[in-house]
Image (cartoon, rainbow, N blue to C red):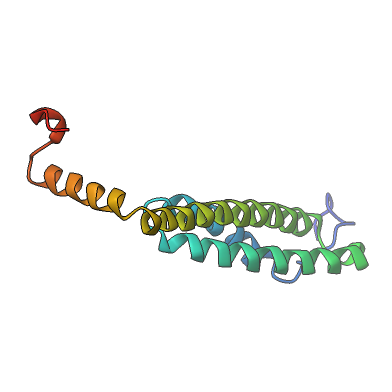
Length: 133
């Protein structure tokens, strides 16, 4: 212990670094998931795991705060906040994906038109340029 921090404990809360990693990863995976939808589900899972683990660690801290370091407490609070944000954003993104696919199933004509436009774009035939309606 150094002379400036002689009263602060050096013990870390359980799961201190891993909850922070889960929280950061859940937020990052939401934004990656906008391009590749599979990562949204991974972001949701990591967000929930980080949220639960950090909540448990904070309960441990509140039971006996003098045993654990303030830095570990702040890291765990940050991890919980990031995990909540990641879980919320992932949930919203999943709802949009589900609504998108339900809309595609409910409107097959739209899906066919959408696929035709993609094929036209791939072949260099843009319907806007040719004047077709």
